Image (cartoon, rainbow, N blue to C red):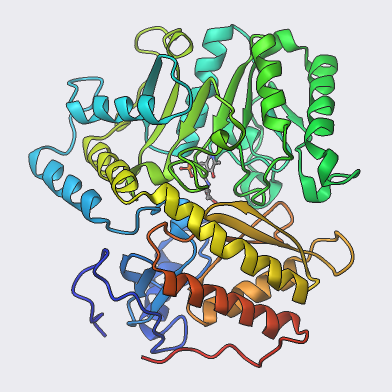
Length: 466
Ligand code: PLZ
């Protein structure tokens, strides 16, 4: 069956519509082809094959229209196939597709770096370098920090996620599925406790200051501040469970770095570009990082990543020390300029805040009905619930899977994360219409009622019909 939608992007009908089981027959055919051709190590969370997407929906090859609470892992924050992204790409791709910036440069690369200097926290002089993926940006931030400080140690945190390349796997905390069987990993990486309010032994209110003090003692005693090139942290952890650090943790760490000549690196690959209701999540606590890594939402779905930071740190690298064939590809840069304009013109920072204002109270009300929800957290359009055995902090990944499965069957894309696989996370595109946000939350509520029972149980989630 050919999808009825002529084109994707914002004009796609903003409705949930299930016309087959999920996945349907066409998706199942493609799944069989996939199994015979695609390596098993590349997983799929919800096996519907997409034919069109835009606004707050994904349309599959069977004609089902699913509500998107995932944004392709916080990438299409401006919506899929957003107008200015598509226009920019079309115009650029018709002029030239690649020269390699290191061979013969072009304006788009410079313009993206100018935008990064303007938009990232701090009014100091900045420089940027562009890459293809988040992992590559993180690797290069470490290279820059090492070159600048002439030190080697890198400090990272429990539950951290920084990528899947060898160095970034060393920086990433979780073994399965990321690290298992892939070692040996790069040396000189030191892992510290994370300020995780829900799991902090003396309670969330003490978490920020106590965790910071503990980390600082550990660095001083076990690593030595004078050996540390950089402290690398996600200002809200992504894959690790949407952990918003206890208040005061980030500012205290940044201050410690400043007094000890350590480069403070914020990995804003998942949190950046309006997702949390600010351009960058560091802003919520007034933290100005020395270096910031960005990717994902920077280019509305095209592969682009960046390291941006203090000019004197970035420029401490010798000429030719940074680069790559495709880094800052002109088509990806055109997409980024379109995405940035979209965020500004449509005030998507404000939209992210409004989405949080709708979601967090609904999720807190849901927590009251379902003791399996141990914690509700997040900022802006980056929110999550953590599932535990009621009355304890024992993670409950099985119920998390079951709730996600019920959402998927009802036509809502939700993702799971967390070291223990027990966090249901919500990352809607920032352009999602109100009625889809409301409907998606309704599906989450029904999924909990169906799976976790309780007084609100209303029977199985009913699929909307076309
Ligand atoms: N830093 C904070 O969130 C990517 C990973 C999905 P890449 N997160 C999604 C998966 O299972 O591979 C991420 C991130 C943070 C770095 C990265 C890495 O970005 O573009 O995937 O390399």
